[in-house]
Length: 451
Image 1: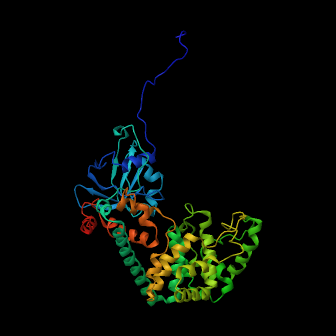
Image 2: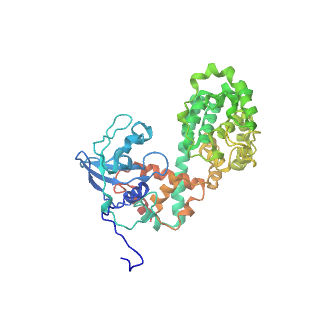
Image 3: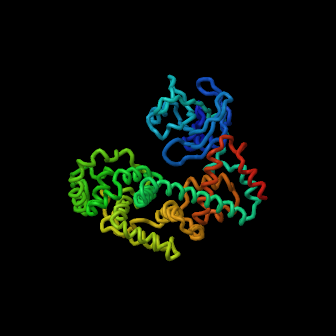
């Protein structure tokens, strides 16, 4: 041993590498573990469709489908954990986001048996997977979803024909939204419905429910009775004024918060039962510039200048430039505090920020204003199809993967709001209703006829 310059040691016992949870998810989604399993209770479990990879909060895969003992497919979510006990340890049993889970997959078994139940006490089947069966090679380039059968006939269609399919679906979707708004106006009145719809759009997907609840609990008519108190009422009912200790705020913020408190406390006892619980807000995945407190300030500004908003709606149609007129109106909204602050507790920003950004204005146009104008029989379709697309999102990317796969023209089909909305409509009408992993979906055959 003294004659050699190095000593090489080998481990006496070699244990297989346990992949990370993210790698397990990717390999499960790629089908490397197979599609047929036996649950811990002895039931046969067949994966009908692996679903869509959820890269946000909640179960790992949504819109999946499984079959138990050869029965009719069950649609729901799939959660993958390293340990069987993680279902309880991670709080899934009491989390409403996991209520739709239909399968729990795990790698390591505990010394004692663990049962998996949802918040409503529904039992969830469990499947054990063995990483030793995996090949060593692994590619991390896994798409959000599996391309569907429809990608083949769509690839054979000329570009203008695909665009016409998307436009037809977008037109149908727009009419649906207009019809829903028209029905709500008949019940609640024009202004209240518009206020609630704008509030929901400002909340976006993470806090849409919270903003809708605020707009319902503080109707526009009630807010406008005391215009000087609008902002304080909104922040108070949102639960953002729960502490009266001004020392928790930055020096530059204290005066603003003091003004809110002075306006809020006379109303507090009257509306205390309407205050939203703190757990209803989702902030972790929100960009600072889109924090719900900034969005709430924007809603307060719109409520104060409501007559200006109504004039803008009329002017936009009369002038023949609805999108441009709306963008100018929302782009001019300002606030002396929120133009330079992300939250009530954050330090001031040296750079001025838009109260409502371009992507949020685009969302309000697509999901509120254009459906609202159409509900009042305005001729807006040609203006609607010219709306340029803003940001994409996971749902759009998933839908594009399902329908177009690796078609090089994919980006060309998603350049306008109408095309994006049409794609979402097709995805919801077909992909979201299918529990057969495309096998029984009628859309591919419908598209094949177009060729």
